[in-house]
Image (cartoon, rainbow, N blue to C red):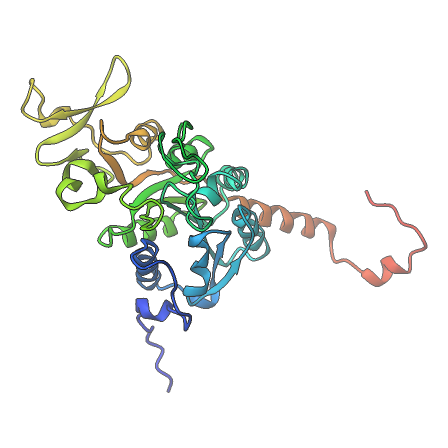
Length: 339
């Protein structure tokens, strides 16, 4: 008699025989570890899973995950993934892309994937620089960033990846940190459980071309004050005695200290991940005036996904049309009319 007991998967089950090659110290190593742990905890079937990438350092990912994979072209991972999901809605599709690949050449494709609510998981590795092409500034680079393409310092206003996702209609938006191995797998598991497009920005260090860009957020001596870990139904507190409250006159967030100026715990907002306005305010917070929000900012599933609607429409059309007879069509004459 065959043993039908499910085999518990390990992160190592999702490692391939390929040598993992990023620059020593790159944050992508930690993200790969977090993704492989999440896949194991989910119990993902490798034979039903596809990783899709565009161009950039992050795009090596499909080679290092023991699933199916497509290393596609610059900025078009979202389009390829949409086609894969439409062709086989049962597949578990993940997209891996960088800030330049996603928000510059691929910005248009990302926008449509999110607004359509295609049931895929989109991971955006944000290191605020173009790493593979040797350090040019990217759409998320801070003003003043000196790079080969901006030797005098960038004058562009940077994009907030999570704000962009929320602005184009994403129904699941989260943020993690490459080295945050206690939190990142859990965020990815929640993204996977979401029905529809899930978008996760991951702050990632590029040790060669933008080393330490997030040091004022991630280093141990500042993390407690510089990060706020948001959890549904829990107060938005950070540090030892700080929290967020809403200014009712301006409808803006304020970082306050509990116990000072009459501020009590009752004044602190409670996170509601189904509240779009709250998610937008949290996504827009940035250092040094506010802590950076980590966790699931928004999770408000729609009734169905784009691929589900397309499949249902296709089935309805097929059922009304009846069984097709290709031989009868080919022998019906030299021409035919399509209604």
